[in-house]
Length: 278
Image 1 (cartoon, rainbow, N blue to C red):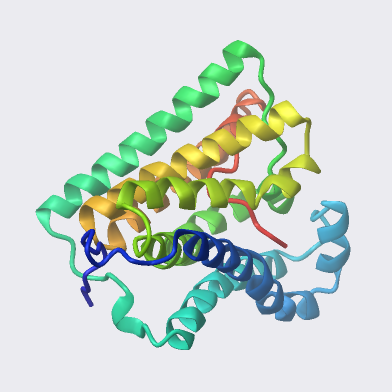
Image 2: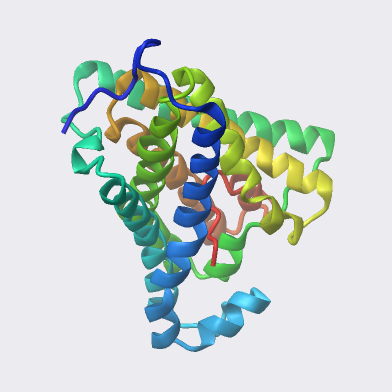
């Protein structure tokens, strides 16, 4: 359904501080609290996942358990968004879904190519400057399993991109429109998205590595937020997001299968919108 997602200046009467607090609360609720609850069946199905989540050693866990854990994690994000819409009486009509037009496809292609170029550019810049990237939790979950990489490509299209874009673009960013201009909303939502991951990255690397990863995460979020502003269609940033993450996993798969330089894959998987709050 298509609804007006960008109020005019006359309609933009939401309190800025309240809107920001709501956005932060939705981020914590949708990225951490609900997914934590939703993944419980996976831990019950494979108890080894509990120890692996604490140690980062997923090699002894089952493929099915890891797949279920990540699928439920993203489903949790979507559930959090739906809960918010129903709780606030906004309803499902708040969701900006429609068949992509030719104009939408231009933004899908632009967002996909732009995000991939951004990722490549930043990865190469960091390599030249000798800036390390914080370790990615997803690399621990994959645990060197080529089959898991292929499963992740499917998860990206079916769960990851749809859930994250629904929560961060169609819920959080759109909620910020009530108090801020669309582009300010994009920047605020992207800052919140990056900051909420700060503790997770700090545990995985130095401050320099953490900052490097958060810059990439922020940049990717800005790109997807911008194409959502231009298209007013959730499918547009979702498709661009899925293309970027699929590209990352394809590179990783090729690297693993053909035994290419092992440093290549982590540089492409710097955790742009792929951090799992497990």
